[in-house]
Amino acid sequence: MAGFGTLLRRELVLAWRQPGDAATVLAFFVLAAVLFPFGVGPAPNLLAQMAAGIVWVTALLAAMLSLERLFQADLEDGSLDLLALLPSPLWVAVAAKIAAHWLTTGLPLLVVAPAVALLFNLADAAYPVLLAALALGTPAISLIGAVGAGLTLGARRGGVLLALLVLPLLIPVLILGAAAVDAVLAGLSPRPHLLLLAGLLLAALVLCPWAATASVRQALD
Amino acid sequence: MLHRFANPARFLRIAAVVQPWCAAICALALAAGLYVAFFASPPDYQQGETVRIMYVHVPAAWMALFAYAAIALAAAVGLIWRHPLAFVAAGAAAPIGAAFTAICLATGSLWGKPMWGTWWVWDARLTSVLVLLFLYLGLIALRHAFDDSDRGERAAAVLALVGAVNLPIIKFSVDWWNTLHQPASVVKIGGPTIHPAMLTPLLLMAAGFMLFFVVVLLIRIRSELLARRLRALRLAQAHAAEPAAATRGPVLG
Image (cartoon, each protein chain N blue to C red):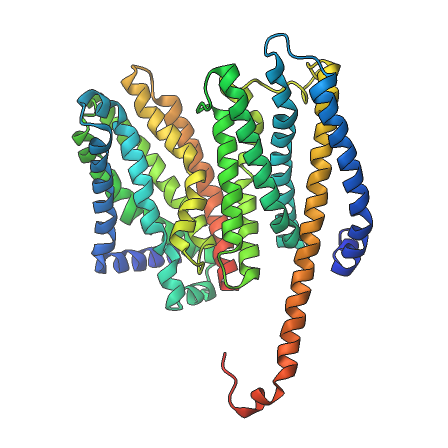
């Protein structure tokens, strides 16, 4: 697993030297969320009910923006071919890229999400559950999204295509993540939703790096 | 067994024989099914005449699932054994399956308005079938998104396998969640709980839909194979027409 650490550090250094990329995703996240009060009206009760859903939907859309570049830059400059020639299997490099994607996109979204929820008057009791659900859901977004990023590698209009492929597959994450917060607001236990979300994350953790590696290898043939 | 049909020329010969028979039986089954469905079957005691929507809605839903399962199977065969016809078949089946899914959703919506009082509800069965439609559209879009069509076929095959997780979700959604959509009443343990007077037209229509799928699939596969042969011939012609170009200068690419 020494290779994983080295590759992860490479990805993080690259991201650190281009901080604008992650910042753009966060700016899109906040801006898209801020559009909702203008669209549905600023009634505090309505917004408080919609807060979790808005945070989840805009987080999904924001993650789509960054997924497009997951393998693209490395394909263009040839690094992806070199990663495939490493003595360690290709899935290690793919897993490192997925982990780096979560650290540079999922984690910042997780940090900013409470501030966005604050704008919508989310009830105090719901914050821990919102964060727990996002902590379980955003890695699943990175994992499932990586499969789509590999499949659309080198495609025309890759970004739009990526969203078309990945968003339907992410609907379960959205349903469970939003339902966990709704359960708290309704005075019920969010536990079953969070457990299902955790199960989904574990399944994605096992299957997605494998499928993403297969899709990246298709692009390199 | 599998490799006997891997030869496109042999496939074309067999398809040319099978296709007219399938088309004839398909026309008979659809004609008989439509007649029984409209005139020779009773209206439902609760739903009245609207129950006749079932004879289109349910076979379309079955075919939507069957076509996706067939695509996933063909994708697996293509990825594992490099079967030359598998990707062609998967690509040819995707638009047909998408059409069946769209018919299923549209007729379900028309049926839902008089029975449930709404065109659409976000219950698990309806949502998962909507996701199936998006998966079909994604398959079609991904297949045509690359300049290199081999790459598009392989990417679509991987997506077909990933999307197959949705099939059991659709099938069991009415058992796992409380849905407005009714649970299964034909394919279930203990036999169907539907009266023979309604089961007969339903099965006739299902047979007609299945044969329609087979016929259109054969037409699409044959035209795709012919289009490829045409492209190869044109390329050979173009190469033969300019032998001097190759010797004039360095060949790029």
